[in-house]
Amino acid sequence: MRRATRRDLLNVIHRYYLDAISRRPPAELRTTLARGLLVGGHCFGPLGPVHNIIVNSIWYADAFPLRGGGADTEDDDEEVRAILPTDGIFRICHRSLQGLVASLRHYYPSLSTDDALYQLMNADADLSAAVALANGTTRSSTLQAMASQNLVAFHLAAEAAQHPNSTTFAHFASSVLPTVSAQHDIPSFLSSTVSFQLGGSTTSPLCYCRDCRMNLLSHH
Image (cartoon, rainbow, N blue to C red; front, side):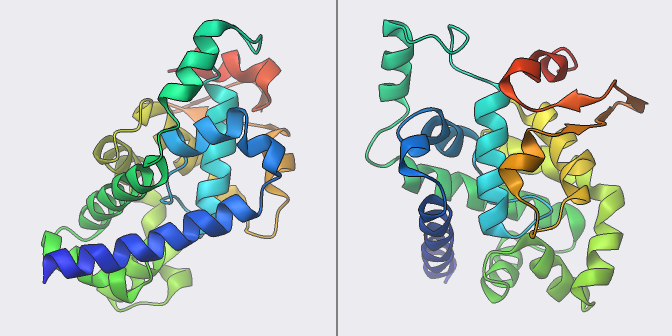
């Protein structure tokens, strides 16, 4: 039963990745965004699954660039090839599912792993929808209730998904992304100036473009 549910969920998540990929320019997917998607482009977060994938991919690619500061080097080329295996999408799907289960069980601790998989299947692998189903509440009220737990939940999700920078991601997903709606131009949002709160203190206005990424990394 668990194996069948996981397989069905992975198929749903895989479709989200194909949708997200289809929305980005092919040139981006052949360069840094491919790395961002396969390493940090998980489908969990405060937005819908597809928008989470897109935002998380762009953010990771800009916040944690390849060595060399953008210059093309032989080492960079080797690193890109190393993270683009043929099963790369399937790997990020599996890791995203692990993160979804971990975060859902944080929001709703009484759920077993099997129960969490069941709720996620009923919610089409959408985290906030799964929490709403588990609580028997509306999605809008669930999003408000989730806010106080997002930092820990996203950190647990990132760790379960083997995100290489789980702490920084958790702060980003819990502090910045909740201010964004799915209707925003997401790339423009990521290159805009925002205030980013970390550890109870607010940094100076922070830009997520590549030129300003070190402001973020200094807090990691």
